[in-house]
Length: 133
Image (cartoon, rainbow, N blue to C red; front, side):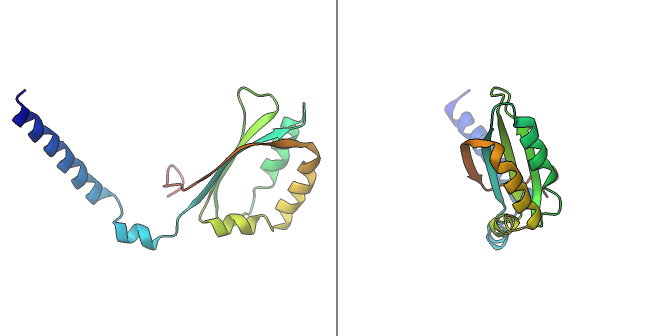
């Protein structure tokens, strides 16, 4: 392929991609007006042999949390005492408010004796996905 034809192909591809993005994505103005979602991904370590008990406590306390779009508790595939919690919230304020709910406070008190520690923790800005809008 000659350099001139190669350049035309790349320009056409880029132009097509930009056109598609313009048709399907929100405008910059819309994105700025929308409050950003808030996400957390964190690793928690249970006391030896207590991971399943900790999963049960965390899973039962997730009902009725305003602003919570997704709360997933998963077992770590490589560490028998670790689990991962992935959360998506409408915004950071909703997450902060959830920590004051009586059900969440009760779960924290119940879980505290069997939490051995915490591993990695990442804050994210979710962009949407299945079930998230």
